[in-house]
Length: 167
Image (cartoon, rainbow, N blue to C red; front, side, top):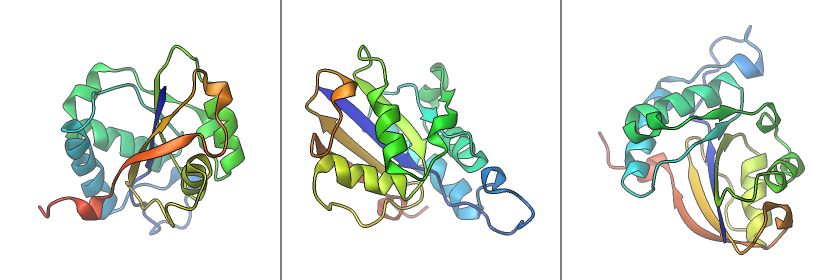
């Protein structure tokens, strides 16, 4: 049995059109939501290493998660260039190459790839849109990550910033 945790980066800023897509920062809502999601997930999950896209907004989301979920700072988090993708096939390939001794993988990436990945793995349309800073957890009835395929997962949990208590 494998567990896959998906998180979309928090809300990004569009107020600096001179920045490339990879360089965009988080806006005020994104800077607020990432730590709030970290604090909420800290009450529900064991901390673990996270792999994030190299995009600035994904890196800042990881930083915000750690700010809200202090136990994450004890783990080595990685950046993987292959997670800067908007294509579900790229993510499927990346997941299939994860080491089998890892029973759990937590990644921070981008839409539409994350929403499409979730729906593909669950095997039917489950979610129209994984919102910014949105989280989803799936269990995959697999022995090895290379067996990852359509319909192999069960959606166990979603958590979105709008579901959190108001500050």
